[in-house]
Length: 437
Ligand code: GCU
Image (cartoon, rainbow, N blue to C red; front, side, top):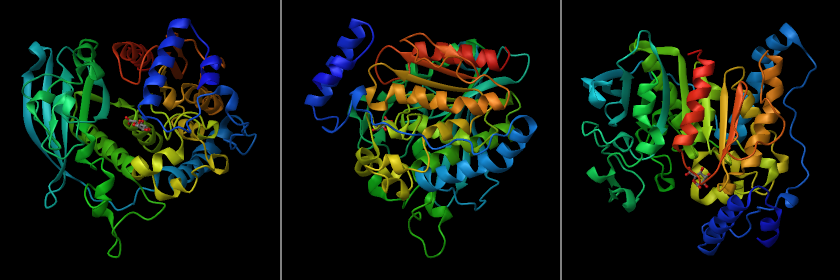
């Protein structure tokens, strides 16, 4: 701890707040005692090669799409997130549950739609969409999953309270694993809906637990996994998807719906965004499904944008017990063996290329390894460049609150693990720029 404090760079107030926060979590036992926060103790490592050839120009492009990209995706499937079974259950019926053209004081149209995945199992993705009323053309859209139901993203009294199981969190009004009225709008700051509408963006969100409850005790007996089992199967094979894979699948089904049925949204300008575990999910969704026009990872950390090989902050062995089910079972084989992983997360980020990608970190979120998130984005940049785009505009880790934006954007926000107005300001300017607004 002491040498980590010495090793911290940056201005004294950041240093003090990082130190106090970490001391607090350390004393509370919130972080495992073996967590490394000392830059000098990051092992020497060599990233697995992103590219296997020196091809350039059209030859590179052909090889990338036909060979290397599919290879990298397959590696990430078998070692990190698991393969999504290929059974096609669609097309899914949808039911519009509510439409209000005068929502948010007349500035937006609110729609609530059920995408029915399996009637018998009562599985549906209950989607909330706000469309800007002042729009001359189909609007770009931010789409992402939420942690505790759609009613948490805005205080709008007409948003349906999610009735499904959710992890207990009494301080936001979850009682007996169900959302209560008290949860309405508790996460409005994370979503900034009015601000997005004002800027001409639509917003689409659904509760991750509609797709797969975030609960290790359920052991893949509920959510969408069982719909994909073979007759002899009762849980995913070691190389098959965990919860993140399922959530990413859900994001693609929401995108199907927007493309097929929502003409007020520009289907080529849907930005997938997520925070923390849902940031890992947004990256995996955006990596696999090239229809997403822009991808944003907010504080996604280990198993998200951060490089495993730095062994800084959260590591694979820390995840196994509490949240190993987010990944495929093969992932756990690399506990304490990060250096042997055939992949690292620069490969995940490179799968987003040449589409715009934004990676955001926060100074006090050392558990998510901000520097590892930055370095992964930097190491993904060559693919952007070979595809004719600027990756990260600078190879130097940015100072706090000094965003850089190429076709990859990055910022290190002052403060804690969260999504804030500051983060949205950067995402909006990034999306404005890339969606040419
Ligand atoms: C835990 C977990 C992280 C994750 C975060 C979240 O802190 O260790 O990997 O990103 O939860 O999703 O809130």
